Image (tube, rainbow, N blue to C red; front, side):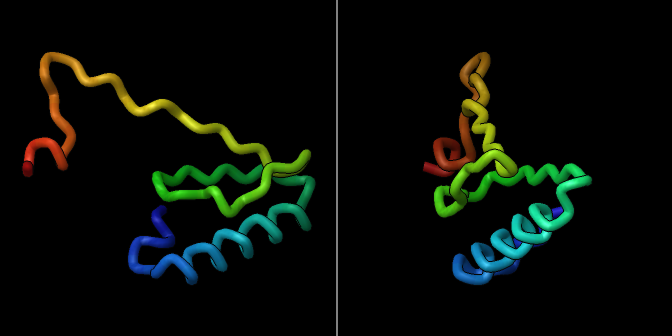
Length: 70
């Protein structure tokens, strides 16, 4: 679920750091976080892997919301 929907940037970063530290302490488990938010403050390490996806390709002239509202 989107735990960070109503958080400001500082709270969001602190929450993400807390989730990652908790995951590191529980190394016998696997955690997967999926977010459209900026995670540039997170440093990858052997226990933290970051996979970035490319933006979706737009077919048949499909627009983003920003393009449609302009």
